[in-house]
Length: 527
Image (cartoon, rainbow, N blue to C red; front, top):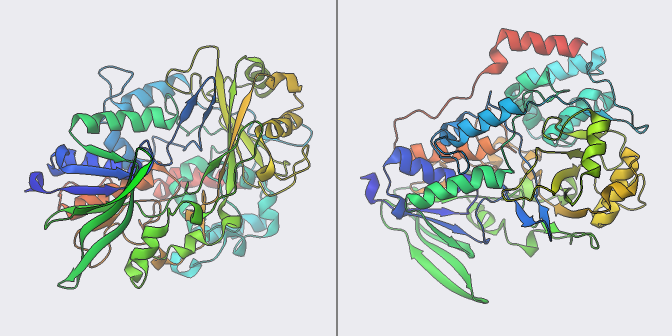
């Protein structure tokens, strides 16, 4: 039966790509019966990576991976062939790479004197410990839409732990207490090694080249169809036996400079998977000479379809909980392309880490709360041997810099490099060959916004017959947003439920229930 159904995936991010793979691998759906509709010119959604040595490379972000967690992600990538290691899966390739390049940060925090901050102790007072314990043990229903700062004293946000945890995962004090609590449990293994980032795993290249491209190649081999430059504008539907049934997909096709309105009929038994919301919606790039343009959802319509669907249907969630306060959900990243090794050489001498072994270096007294990370080179497929690329970001881009007298959001790439060299006390000549491309992301932590349980739909909402939601904005018990795993798990859950697949979705590893893990976390908290 499954071979005959057709499936339409609205959005070409990792969630949709994973859903297509699970339908083929586990649901016996013919790849030629699967169509992915994507408004952009490339697949991958937030897992992007673009550019070249001449124009400069650009990444909006880099997602942290672990092999202790990410159960659904690795379940998928154990069956996706590597593009660069013949005979190996993407999982095998990633595992082998991390055996050779182990994370052991020796300069996790740097203060205003350019001194490496001792981070073997977390800096907690007894009050901090008691409050953190109370929050980690609180019932989610009691936390409701509260903020982290509603449960922890101001002193907590000056601890070494907070600077490391917040910049590793991109938390702000005003973000959701529920999400923070989930992170404490899901990544309890990382609590005891947060200062070295010893549990963090990296892909061979950036995640577009290492995760998106192999999956796209495999899907293409299976016959999956991709419709690019295609923006879905509406879903026709009917209510049948009290169930919501999508009957047609309305979309706008962009081709040759012209846009045309089109429609796809969704027949009985066909399925629709919708990537609702986007953390990289309305992103904008700057240059060495120009700051990124300040865009919002009116400039991209990325939230419009979810808002239409959710109007009057509480089971489809509440997008306004996530997209109503850019000031609380935006930050800025930057990607630097270098034509000589001076900066990398000076960073290795300063930090003690070779590129690819150190993880984030956070300047804790930076007004912008800036961090950088030097990945193993090359970071892009096809990157020349004489070119280096590194990435950085700042959690407070609305504040005046320490060395540049303007907010980061108003800075071009040259000014961001000046601020960075100021913190490192590096001569500007070390970045003389640099091309820094800043990227403003107004909704990048929108999924961390305080929310009620009902604000996120289930992957397959109650009373939905053929429509599933797969994104960072669905409700999955105990798992954590802002991870590749969340999108892949949502996709696997939705596919298995709608296709009645009996194979179990890999359960979340209960590391937080391990007595050893709990003891190690306690010892770390008491230092």
